[in-house]
Amino acid sequence: MTTPDGWRRSAEASRAPAPPVGPTTEDPAQAAVPTAGAPTAAGLLAALPQGALTQPGAFPLPAALAHAAAGSRYWLPRQNEAPRTPPSAPPASPPGGFDVEAVRRDFPQLHRDVHGHPLIWLDNGATTLKPRQVVEAVAEHYARETSNVHRGAHTLAEQATQVYEEGRQAAAELLGTPDPDEIVFVRGTTEAVNLVAQSWGRANLGVGDEIVVSAAEHHSNLVPWQLIAEERRARVRPIPLLADGQLDQDAYRDLLGSRTKLVAITHASNVLGTVPPVAEMTALAHRYGAKVLIDGAQAVSHFPVDVTALDADFYAFSGHKIFAPTGIGVLFGKRELLEAMPPWQGGGNMIDSVSFQETTYAPIPHRLEAGTGHIAGVAGLRAALDYLAGLDRKSATAYEEQLTHYATGALATVPGLRLIGQAPGKIGVLTFLLEGTDPTALAAALDQQGIALRAGHHCAQPALASFGLSSAVRASLALYNTVQDVDALVAALHSIKAPPSPSSKS
Image (cartoon, rainbow, N blue to C red):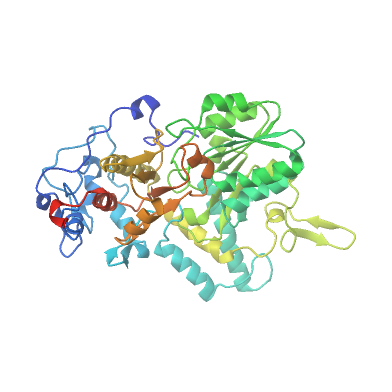
């Protein structure tokens, strides 16, 4: 797959100095014009103890994001601000394109307070919020359409089955496969990887065979391979990381060989934001006869995916990371691979006929979907994918790229802050340490200001270990986040890092 225009830049271009971003020396009262009755970044700073900030004020707004900020409920940018991004930068909201404020109105949770502050949700890498359309779809299923699927001749069974299979079709369209039978419903990415490991892996891995897994993986795309490798006496071999968080492609090429049976790689790292060149890596693996599983949990909500263009053998994602309910996910597999895979669980729905003499199994995808599926979850997934399909994905991707660029520069203004992973073309995952603070304590302090983000190892201990770390703070962006969200985070970090004023000393 060619990553969407404007998403990935060349390594040379990405290493060019970023436009200057940082606190201004102007009067903070002139830094932003508050909207009536709305909390402002300046107001947030004013509420802090005197001297908590050495240079309080709003952070300069890139011209490319000014349009999106103009309708913000938080603040409006200075009218005389000079552009801070090159003129060639794509606009945040091209004509007829992405409208972040319209999107925000669809997410009820964004309009609540936490500890007396408007919620700023920066924990999208853990889970995304749900638009009202998803909430309504799930409620509609339970209120009016509750029934099992694929069984029963009554009207409600037919309606539930229709919604369920429409969800499968929507997932196929999202991933770019023309065959909905290549879509298997699972609980999430974790179950999808375990399914492939336990079914395909058990049938195809032998003594001495090798599974190549990147050091950037979520534990869900590592531990299942360790389990099946131990059972089959195979080996798991890691692709190391470079200093900026990219996968070491030279090392990857050296790892591949005649014993390589499968490559498991992330499409976007949940802790570094790195977007590896998965199309090229897949093509190289195929030269050695290896299959490729791509973990798309962090990718599908940020940019379009085409498994046909990628030539992916397997692709997995979780619904709750693409604005859908928890407990529902998708595994894509090429038809010929799924048809050759034995069932990994037994029960209802996955059989053709059962007797004590012989049991035969249903065709794909049902053969791999034992038991009653998460029907309400599929209803919500369909609504989420319909919602996403109604947006201009190219414009949304460009907006997120600009917001990530702005956030990276703004965080760089915080003294003692170390950003982990700065690969070119990364998604909006910003993992960092703040000198002199414990990550968990820092996240708890930010929560007191209504800022929700995550601290810990992020289920990616080998990735953090590559940087000599065991824990870090992660802010992760989604298409409903704004410049004002970033400013509030950075202002809070400045307040935590700034030394006490002389007047506050006894």
